[in-house]
Image (cartoon, rainbow, N blue to C red):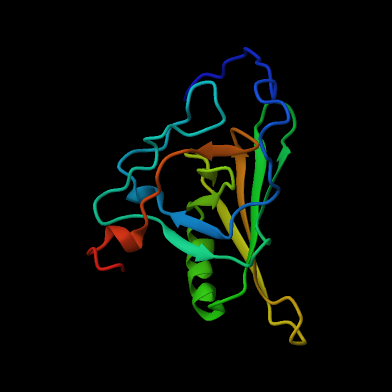
Length: 185
């Protein structure tokens, strides 16, 4: 386990007011199994991030892509009492291909250790996962009552405890569909 540097740093001073900060996450979520990686992910020293080499996949392995309802994705975290990390939650809605989603979500719910990547609008990914404690998945389904009702699977991924309230990764994610036989999946 990497040691926590107790040195503080200035925040937001380098480009004060120059960078855009968008709320929300992208419209795609990526899911991978830890056993498909060549090595256990490692946190970068003195950063709330995984090292660029952290998510290297074994040959033929990669992440699966979930297209989610636009503007339904959100990451929130709450600090656990004292020096006990964070309870990080990724929430999103799957409103298309709901029959296949029901099957996939049951598998993920029963496993309890998948790695979730959310697109960071500024580039790279937010990662909801801790190499020691994994994740838990839960979901609810609602068909809606009228054509304009919200419908689909409301999914919550929980990583508790997690080392950081928000963890990023700047690497290039290998997709399972691109890692297979090369025919696009």
